[in-house]
Length: 278
Image (tube, rainbow, N blue to C red; front, side, top):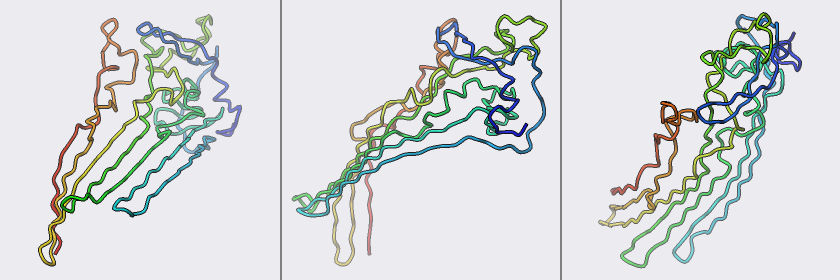
């Protein structure tokens, strides 16, 4: 009966997976139900042991060109692999709506629905990052030019569909079970995941910034004038939609928020900086 141990009775209260197909999208997703005749425990968790664990592997390589012949620069590449694991029987207290067991936030103790899509897969860690910097002393009027390049993998978009919740009138018991043995009420998963974490990502963000500066000397005093240009290529990469629920696709009077853009990379910006040293 100790929480967190494989075979924890809470985990054994659930059977499946069964398949639910969303009528708005035609996308199918697995879900679990309480076993026939089972009564789900109630109560609050005071303390629990979690078997969850994470792994991280990464490699970073940097190439640097020291200042010579009037220019310098460096470029680096970082590869990341972060994964989180939720073993069977894990007692997860991360969700305030769940009192233990796997814990998918459904409010039902030990419900493993959707847990498999997050176990062993990435979170929002970028798979790769490329950074570059260079500066050069131009031969005209003592100008100094510089550039920064950042290429970042896009964020994970964790997509879901409307689930077999109470409004779908799906009993919380295995399909085909006699009504007298369906003691768990109705399924309460308002949304369910249908693919592994990290399967879908936003497009990579490729940002280039440039600047040109000039020093003006006044005896022992100096004024530095810098013209900056951010997002030189004026990219408009989407970074967020209003909803990650694929059921909100506008079909059958559903909202259209799944394809509605919420945020993009800010547009090109010019800025003039003045720095006075005395």
